[in-house]
Each structure stands twice: as structure tokens, then as C-alpha cells.
Length: 260
Image (cartoon, rainbow, N blue to C red; front, side):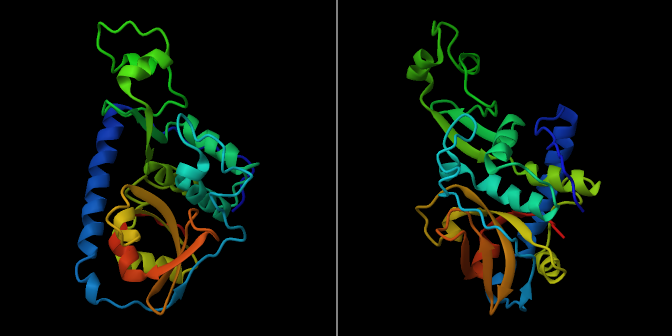
């Protein structure tokens, strides 16, 4: 399959679609969690999936200092971009550069952020005074974002919307989002690798790194399991790859997607 031009769907949808999508997401996450039962005593057969020709590293000087939407750089917060790039490469979808893809992802509302002192989530490409006014007190007379920051607090990145991967996979394969794009059993992930695919994942950093001080989530891509060790593509690693116990990886994973 080869596409020369591809447009990622916008992350934002109407309320009814959002509700339906959220219900399906919750159901899939419940099944995935259920599949982890007995994981501590499980062993895995050797399976080698798809390995890309190019490895993407967040610290690459070609893009490490490039702004990723409203806050942070690709080196600091671009793991969703690099994981998506592997997915698009697999499908033969060409982008002129990683930064072009980052811009499209951010402009399509997949890059989430908030003001430090308020919980409301935003996903606009850049922060503006109009955004700030949505959380500022009515009696605040701030005329520009710089003035508003004194009350709102600084702009803080809070990751990327998982549905990016669902939307890409569904769009390319003409299948249903979430229902047909999510993995709900660990055995499915193994089978996908066995058939020559790979598995994008969102993991909890504390479990993934075995360090409770590491908070938040991270997007990586599972490509193989050998001797019960998982090989993943991880843009934050110096060589773009990491090996860790398969049990630890699956325990850390909160969402996984079907790519084959």
C-alpha cells in the first residue's frame, strides 16, 4: 500500500461521537487490563515483527528543538509524533519531514496542554489570550497572554490524544475506530508480531522504567519478543531502541494498537 498524500482526521468530534468513542475506549481498556491477569507467571514465544528502515530519535538535531504545538519541543514531548511516523512509514504514507508531521498532529488537536493553575484541557496549536480568558476570573483585565500567565500559571504539556493512532489506522484500512483498531488481549499483540506487523503502545513511565518517580505516559512501539525480552522502538533512547522484560512491558502498557 502506498499513498503520496494523507490527511490525518481532526481529533475533535461532535459530542455524540465523542460519547460513543469514550464508551468503546473504556470497554477496550477493561478487556486489556483483564488480559494481564496471571502475567507474572507467563512466558512468551519468540516472535519477530516488522522492523522499520529508519529509526527516529528525539534528540536528533534535525528536529530536537522544534516546537511541538503550544508547548515543549519534539525532544521533550514528541514521542507521539515518532510513534505515529513509524505507523505512517509502515503504510507507505510519505511526509516531507518529521516536523511537517508534528505540525499536522498539533494543528489537528492531538497535542494537549493546560494552564498550570487550571485543569481545563486545551489542544489549540498555540496558546492565546482567548484561551486564557476561558479560565480567567470575570474581573480579570488581562489584555495579552503575558499578563494572563501571572494568574493562569505557565503553559504545561499533558501529552497527546491516543485516538491519533485509531484515526490513522481506521482511515487507511477503512475500519471502525477503537472497535477495530485496539488490541484487547496480549495474545493479539503476539499474533500481530508473528504475522509481520508491530504494536504501538502507550505505557506508564513508572512501570515501564521500574521507577516510581517517573510519572506520566509515553508512546513506544513493540517490534519483537525474544527469550522473554521485548524489543521496542523508543524515541527517548540514545539509539532509538530499548530491550526490557516482556512482562514488564505488558504490565506498563495501558493501550495497544493493531498494525499489520
